[in-house]
Structure formats: C-alpha cells, structure tokens
Length: 348
Image (cartoon, rainbow, N blue to C red; front, side, top):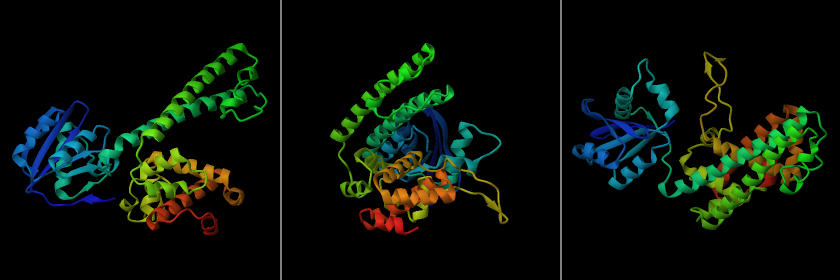
C-alpha cells in the first residue's frame, strides 16, 4: 500500500456524501483553520479554500461521489489524493464516529503522511469504464436467470437439456421441458427477461465498439493476442488495468486483480484469510472469463487444466491458471510482447 507523504502548507480533509460534505483544513502544525459542513457544490468548496490557495492539498475517501472533486482539483490545479476506503477504516477507526470527526481525521492522516492511496482514474476514460461495468452488471443478471432455469430443472429431477441454453437458438423448447404449468410459467418469465437482456447487451456492445476510441491501441492488441479474448473482454481488461506501470511488481498486480488468496499471520501462525474484497472485482471477473475462453480455444491449455484438476480439484485448478494468466499479462504489457501459449504452458 502506498502512502501520500508530500509536504504542503495546508491540508484539507473532506468527509464526502451525496449532498453534503464536512471540510477540515489544517496547517503544518495541526491547527484547525477551517472546519464546517456545507452543500456539495464546487462554488462552496472554492469559497472555503480561497484563503489557502494554491498551497493546499485535498483528500477524500474513495466512495462513488469523488469524481466531481477530482475534476474540480484538476481544473484549479490543486493536488488531489484519493484515500483507500478499507485501509483508511483500519487506520483511523475509533470508538466515536461522525462527519466532523472523520473530516478531521482525514486531514490529520494527510498531514502525517499516513493516507493510504487509491488510484485516481483519468477523467477522459471514466465514462467508458463505467459503461463496460454496467454491461457486466446486466451480464450477471442474465447469468442468474439462466442458473435459475438450470436449478429448477435439477429441483424437479428432470433430464438435462439437449443443447446448452446459453445460446439463444437453443432456448425455443426450454419451457416445454417442464410439465407443471405453474413451473413452466416461471421459466417463461425467465426466458422473457433473458431475451430482453440479449437485446440490451447486443445494443450496448455495438455502441461501445462503434463509439469508443481506444486510448492505448497497442496494449489492446497485446490483450487481444490471448486466445479467446475478444474485443469486449479486451476492452474490459484494458480499461480496468489502464496503465500497467502503476504496479511496481507483479505481486501488486495479481493482488489488485484478486488472483491471490490473502492470509493473516501472527507469531508464525496463520489466523485465517481476510480482506477478500481488497482489489478490483471487475478485473478478477475478466481474468476468470479469459481463463475459461483460453481453455475452450486451446487443447494444450485444456490438457494442462485436466492434470491440475486431478491434482488440486476443479476450482483450485482454475484459480492456478487465472493467477498464472494474470502474471503473464503483467509481463506481456511491461515487455510489450504478445501472448506466447507455449511459454505459458511450459512455465509451470
């Protein structure tokens, strides 16, 4: 975890909410120069910071409304620090909590060089990344409906479907598979929603491919060199990674992508796992999807997976390959080399 330790004359901590924000400004000696609650507007923030410009740095916790403050700081040329929410909770957790206390603690951590930093994603790429994430949300909803159909089939101990129902052309007779009219109606509702999701997803994918101007075409080409990674999945990986140089080591990257299992150790003893939500859930999904597509596309990878499955079980085998794929992507992008399947399989 990186900490912000640059020196400034004034330190501003903001406890940010959707409508209000509590602003605290400290000087180098830790004296409170400003501490007040106000509405979330750029004009209010400009007014309260006017006596301290241009020698102030601003920090907010990483919650979903931070975009406008980052844009405000970029426009006004004010240093901006985005605090990692989970790490900050561990650092400044206390018995008593309020917006007033939190803003003071954020400013104090900023002044003492103890703010754990999250990545400030570039303004010009945020909208595309958020649209890709929204598409992923709808994909998951569609998958839940397909899973419900499969679970209902198993619930009534019915025979398997003749063809995979993930493909639209194979769903025409799915409802007739269920004899009970009430159960059949439930399945028909699922199918109707799945068809709507198919239409929505096809539309958003066509929009993305036609409108998005890829910021880094060379990195996009390298990601597409992985067997099975298409345009949409390549864009998801590209926009979630953004810049591979921000990860100093391969371990940092695989941890960010949730490809390693966190452990807690004390006095040489393991205290169990924790912090499973640390990292990027969207990038973890992308690598899981890329792993399955790689196994589908290449027989050599499928054979390797079979050996790992016999030794470790199916879930663990997929996790091993996903982790290895994450390491491969890190070195690919750093060294600007396309994916080498033979090297990927041989380095076990």
